[in-house]
Structures are given as C-alpha cells and as structure tokens.
Length: 299
Image (cartoon, rainbow, N blue to C red; front, side, top):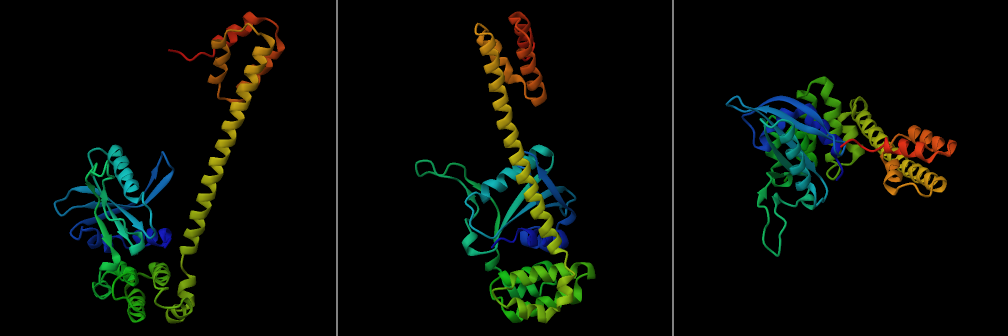
C-alpha cells in the first residue's frame, strides 16, 4: 500500500489527532515541519514539533509504512541521528506506524552477528490493524476516524459513520482532502463508486490531494533529472580531463607525471577547455610546466 502522500497530508491537517497514536496524548502540537535531508534530498513531511506536559519542546518523527521494507527502521534511525546533529540540544524521537501486516518488521534494530544481536536498539511502533476501528470512530478524533478503515473491525458501516463525522465536524477547508484520504483507505471495504455516491462527487472534486500528488511527482522528476544531469556532467568532466592529459603527454612526452595529473584538479569545464587550448597553442614545455604546477592544490 503506497500511501505516502495521503498520510503526509493527513498528518499536516490533523496532526494533533494523531498524538495518542504515537504515545503523546498529553503533548501540545507546536508545528508540523517539512525538513530537507541534505545528503539524500529526501523530505521529512511528518516531523511534529511538540511540547510535553512539563513544557519541554521536542521533535517526534512519524514514519508511515504501508509495504514491506527491510530498511525502514534503519531509515528512521538515520532521520533521528540527522535531526539530533542538526539540533543537539533538542530531544528527538520517532515512531513507525505500520498500516498492514505485510509491512510489519517490528521495531528492533539489531542485526545478528554470528547469531547474536548486535545493537539492541528499539524503535517504537504501532500496528494499526491491532487497534479497534469502533474506538477510533468514537474517540472524537477525526484523524483517527480517517484511519479507522485500516483498523480491526472496520466495515462499510463504520466507513459511512467516519465520512459523516468528517462532513459534520471538519473545517470546510479540510473536508475534501479528509474525505479523499478516507475513501482511499476504505477501498477494500466499499467500492469507489459507492463511496463517491455516499459523500458526493462535488466534495471530492474540491480536494487538493491531486495537486499534492502532481507536485510530488514533479519534484521526483526534477530530482531524477538533476541526478541525470549531474552524472552526465561528471562523465563529460572525466572525458575532458583525460583528453587534456593526452594532449599534454602527446606534445611533451617528458612532462613529469605528477604535473600531468594536476589536470584532474580542474573541475570547471570552461577552465579545462582553456587549459587544453593553451597547451595546444605553445611548444614551450617550461611554460606548460608552470601552468600545470599552478594547478596543484595548496597544502
């Protein structure tokens, strides 16, 4: 179940409703933050900045997991480590919320070495199918009501009750998105057509969820394009460096190897082209030696 965008949107809209789910019922929601991971260009869209009952501010990262991924616990551990380095004085914790039994790998980060556990690190986790849909629906929390189709005892009747609760209680600007998310989770229990008839096509058409899906896809394409361009540039740079070295060696066979290798310190394509042209334009080896020596990185 690939549901990243609906769940990120649900977190953005109803984060306070989710606090009991992550073991923080007494906390106060300060903000829902989107944080960029510089090394991998990944975004953390479900980082909640909370304030404890005692007044301490901290970060709680939610990792929604709807499919099997053996790396999910390592990934969340990496997020927490990065956030801890970013704000060393801030407490940072996280929870994995498993949507389906097929996604469940527990919470223990302890790969065995010769059969013995190696780390003993535990990540808190929630299995939604072990929670009661009826209790979520009657909790008064719209966020949990929207998640109720993924819980134990869910039925088409409870889906209808959840939709009614959203339409009666959610702010108008949230209703369309919440209903769209509810409909996505409810598909195993009620057909899409039946759900549309139940809540009204007009309400679902007002949802911004499609816009979020498009924005996410565009961002993904842009990242992929940027990565491809970076790879192409790296290949072109290497080719031009090697070609410049070949020109130096061809024109000046006695050139010291160490000086020739200085060509590889030039990473600007235009400067490499200028260097190659300069080597081709002169027959003075001493002048080229001075030129290459100037490329050596300062100690």
